[in-house]
Length: 348
Image 1: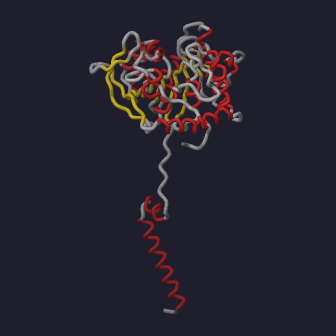
Image 2: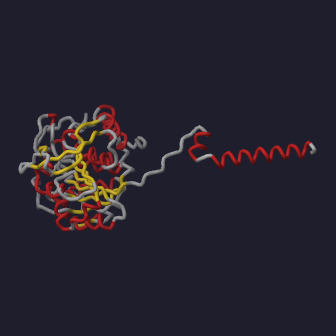
Image 3: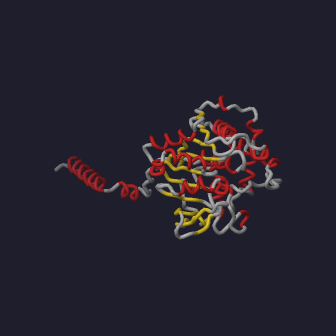
């Protein structure tokens, strides 16, 4: 064999050997050989519905903004709950518009008529805003929209409830089958800890409509997960992260949240909120949004309990069943995550 032919033979043999070796190597093995691990397959966003009494306490506004910054969640509609649901829908619509998310329908739940001025703590922000100007869909019959969205969805929906459960109970009475197609994640209750770290109390969402929550939790959901005051009652944003949010004038969504907070602070009747330039109020509802896509930073456990007529949630072996986030694995990490999401500091 000539030297030229010998070199050709050796090159062909070497190429065949390498080809055979790589053909037997798994994708993970190939990545390991290259010094890299295979990236995880992207997870499809979780379809969610937000039922909210936005417009009284400011935490609902923070929660909606946070939800819009969660790529893990696919917001299908916002449903306003209790009181003047048209007023509440205006706040949601204007916030969605600021975020560039007018693809999300804004729906009105059962309307209880005009609210007292002292309860409409963000009214000046929407004083001149008309729902008719919202570029997306406005739905007067939000209960039917909720049912239809759930029943036609090819994937299970996660229903995030951050207000009294009135709308949800009404929807269940109209269409009981919807529960079997959903997870329920709620901000409800107080078990070992109350407001401000005090003793357990009748938490506001439960106290507002105890029977509605009984009806809701008795339904056959795929899963029920609640954040009571035990975990959500100690979440705030402060320090450098809050200062960054306060100073972020270029982000229309963050700016809208801060504008609402500045309007809310001097109007709120149940507390003195003279610290709004320094830190947030307690951001109860943001924890429910987090639990809709992750439980990594919270500790959950199954608990049975009953709901008293005055809105207390009391452990009872024969009572309603739910998983409760009663303790944090790392609350500070959650607060950092929340600030990073709002500030769009990467997907953390």
